[in-house]
Image 1 (cartoon, rainbow, N blue to C red):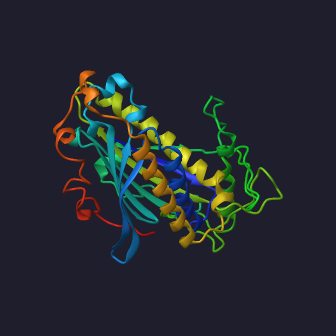
Image 2: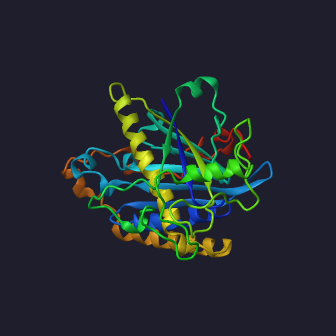
Image 3: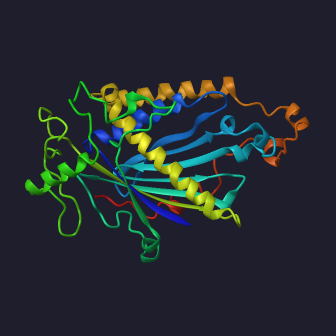
Length: 334
């Protein structure tokens, strides 16, 4: 099993971060839906534990269209669907990913703690001493220049983006380090125990990239991922590959949260909720219209079908995944 903490600094306040996350999640899911690919929301309901309010969601991530056809013919339909179950209770979030075909041979559990300011919490998700020895910390800088590939989009590049509504950006590599210095000078830096103490304004020192800008806010996301792939001979390769994919996903999401700020900034909780519902409806339409076909003709091409394909539709989740107590060991408020 590989354990990595992805530590990401975002130029957003603690109040802005969850709203931006919901907006980006809804918009990006719609953009990535189509051709049988996308996000299918199975459950989205309010959630409460120990006085903390949040949302409990279950989604099916359809990946068939990005799978080569010769591989798709060899796999049952449920092998091409990843089930995500998430308990979002900001500033704590826990997500569990499983595949019905691989079952316990494949798993991913992520826990995220969000902290105000530039945080350097040593063990934010309370890993056991054994797991803490395995953990590696990967600090992600969203301001590093993006590779100019054919997929490059300048509108999600924080090193060139400037927000008209908030006057934030462009960002320079290592931008948060100046903010950390401001925390120390203002008496708002990490305490001796490593816990960040945020100033009342949730902002620190001026952005070094532009002296005319207001001080930048900082929220630190500590994303701790545990991934395993229990297939002899392939475990190390798969786990290393997954580590790179996760880093790309997390980095991309924070880039979008910042670079799309002028789209969501100022929206209320009710407006964000209405936007989410509208995007969920679009995603359902995309899946219904463009679902990759697994018709009888596929059998002639060599598609191997599982009992799930032949008899029953995919379940929402197995019994363990429906039990919050199985995954939610604790909520760790800051």
